[in-house]
Amino acid sequence: MLNSTSITELVKTIGRSLGFQDIGIASINLEKAQQHLQQWLDEGRHGEMSYMANHGSKRWRPEELVEQTRSVISVSINYWSDRGFDPWQLLEDNRRGYISRYALGRDYHKLMRKRLQKMAQLIEQEIGSFGYRVFVDSAPVLEKPLATQAGIGWIGKHTNLVNQHSGSWFFLGEIYTDLPVESDVESVDHCGTCSRCIDICPTAAITAPYRLDARLCISYLTIELKGSIPLELRPLIGNRIFGCDDCQLICPWNRFAQASSEPDFSPRHGLEQPDLLELFSWSETEFLSKTEGMAIRRIGHEQWLRNIAIALGNSSAAGPLKEKMIAALKLRLPTVISSPMVTEHIEWALAQLDSNPSAAH
Ligand code: B12
Ligand code: SF4
Image (cartoon, rainbow, N blue to C red; front, side, top):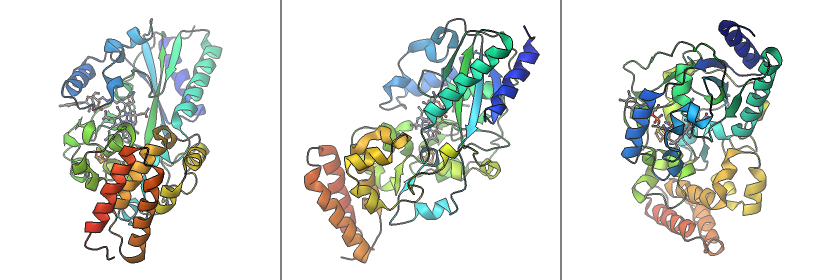
């Protein structure tokens, strides 16, 4: 058996050969993160994401989630690529919707899980059998604190993990192991006095540095929230129809973002600057087939229509475009009458367009 340092080197070499950008070893003491998580839950900031409160101490005690765990291999994979246009302009576009960058390509969960599995097998080939389990997002795992402890980056004021050399456009994944390997040095916070993410957030969801009220975050509202979106937040959502990137787009560290080399993360079906009316016209069958293999599919057709209705209602389109939007919204009413939730959002959008002074009849 190799010694601890050699295993660490081996793990990193194998990880890099599989296309992970950063690989580190985390210690499994998550006491500080547990306190913050507990406070966040006590304040109800997780909203309807009840899974964040379930599973008890398994989330902060890796050895309770997977017995015998002694260390965690944490990895990151970049998903960013230049869209070839200014995202801020798209956010102001009356006709188009904004889908967050992470969701434009193939759903990362499957891709990363498979690759982590492969990584563990390759390590086994070199050092012999060991105990492990791989995770990406779905299990009760504190991915960001683990990645910080593995030296991959620090939790920024917007609460995303930031890396000094590559910014924050990356996903995280883990291998829980029973290997007795030494941990990497924990990353240091480099946010300094910058508060651009806090200032830019459309809904003031970052209530203080490092503190996010998920109930206000557009990512939560458009993806996680299943029911009606609170009335007072709808105008602030603008044309963001799936997730939100504003706090990352403004972050100075993303000047260093490296384009992803994963063809699977390339944008699909022209969804990087989609036409709202076209998306709104998709039948459920079209929605399911066009979003196959993508994270967007998880929200289902009803939530999809709900989100686009809000974007249409927020458009300041005038003249024929406004008329087309009104017609499209009205056309949907009889067909979605079985969904009071969507109907209510369409009625809200029609009222918004009607009261919009810049939009002439
Ligand atoms: C729940 C969740 C959400 C929720 C809540 C987000 C959140 N900040 O918790 C919602 C739906 C809003 C969300 C949105 C997004 N998410 Co998300 N989400 C998660 C999930 C499942 C759990 C995160 C968690 O543990 N939250 C618990 C709270 C307590 O943690 P926290 O807010 O980060 O707070 C930490 C610190 O800020 C600090 N802290 C808290 N309070 C205080 C107070 C003080 C004084 C101090 C100093 C520190 C401090 O300690 C806390 C614990 O470490 C993870 C996957 C996973 N299993 O880890 C993905 C994950 C975090 N999401 C991810 C992504 C990509 C996103 C989006 C960018 C998607 C998008 N474009 O729309 C947005 C980003 C929004 C944002 N600004 O964070 C990636 C992030 C990758 C990265 N580079 O960081 C993850 C890691 C998934 C993955 N496998 O890649 N997400
Ligand atoms: S993702 Fe958008 S809404 Fe959520 S904290 Fe960042 S800027 Fe605010």
